[in-house]
Image (cartoon, rainbow, N blue to C red; front, top):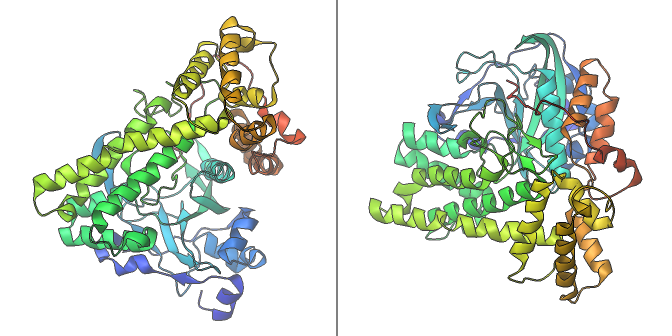
Length: 490
């Protein structure tokens, strides 16, 4: 698309800093035009924040860009290379079904990748067709926007476009493309690719680029590569604690699904827990529970070890000393994670200060929730609004004893009951994208009805509002003899 006026009116303001890296980090991609692109959903607030004109994006030319049918002269149109561990096994990877349009510079000077997911084959497709089905792309749109509403760092979804062509998985599906927005798509696996298939200079260039793009405040430090590692560790200690605090299960925490920026990425087999159970696994391919809810902090630390290994030549010329530096840095993850997690759990219980007893109070509550099969989200809402005290766990003597201990704990802090209630309201979402609601929205969309998804998106975009219209979305699904299962959706 070479009409400069149309590009300006649409709001595109692209830069391509990633292409300044060695060419081995990416491949230039020819477009794979689709027959009849049709806009399904556009994220108006996100488009505005990016400096994009929503009316122009909905035009023929705008949809053609979002479908990968037209280029923008200033765009990059590349697929990125990476190689990492999938369920513990190292393999060559890369953007097998995505292309990066370029980096949008927003009106306030921020930089975001704009990527088309499901846009067709690339040199990294490994035999795949590079396409995506409508359901999984809408699912990523829903979950990523829910995560944004919950205040959890995440990639976001700008739009979903139907391609007008079928894709074949277990059955014939409608094809679709998701326009994904990220502060970058630099993954742990990008560094692993550089370390395993490139040179030390390649790793250094990537590290320097990552520092400049995400951690410029340590870029000029004499220990900048150590600080890069520490910043990435810090970001993921915070991120995973936020996942745990809302019962989110990523489902496929491979190193290619962990970003340097600390944003949640790749919403394939993810889901939110209903009944609290630390062993919960949703992914159909995670048969051994590697990425179960309780293992997410452990797997984040494992992945950080793999990232740290790629930086060893930059940390110190002496390998033994470099290993010690990396080990010391990664060993801090557990305490950083725990500090973040217990702070969030204190907030969920209205606790402002710190006491040694707090850990036991939190763990005793979680233990009861597991024992009596209580819903994770609704239990904290019940405590926040002092309701549902006539059933389940709440009528047990065990809970009454815990409740009295908790109330006494609250009395030992100076904050008022109103302040406690407000903190709990701000820390406990009334709604999450419950699995049965997501499936309901996707089933309706499959039949051409997008109103169900629209209503769901409206509710989950304001999870801390605690409004009357959200009550319906807090209800649990009907009992089922089959556990809920998610799939990668490729």
